[in-house]
Image (tube, rainbow, N blue to C red):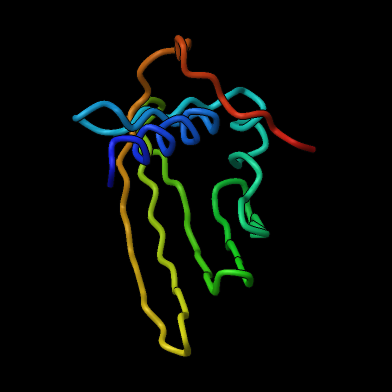
Length: 120
């Protein structure tokens, strides 16, 4: 990825409350409304996320041939594990991805990183 493309991508991510510039991982800023509603910002690319319970979801992105299921588990008040799996279909060929993300609470204030606006 060119430095210019990377800079544009990082700027777009920052508008969504994500800072990927840290070599140890990503910082994500969640606002109170996002936590209380149990979901993140609006889905891009015409995707729709359906939440079956507060921290379980199914995302469907028909425009890009993508489906994803996930859940967040909270082993303590300061830690979170997000497990998800998805299927991408491209030219009739399906490809499956699985991920596990571990997260920890850093602070109540995200500093210069702001959470995305929650649309109702």
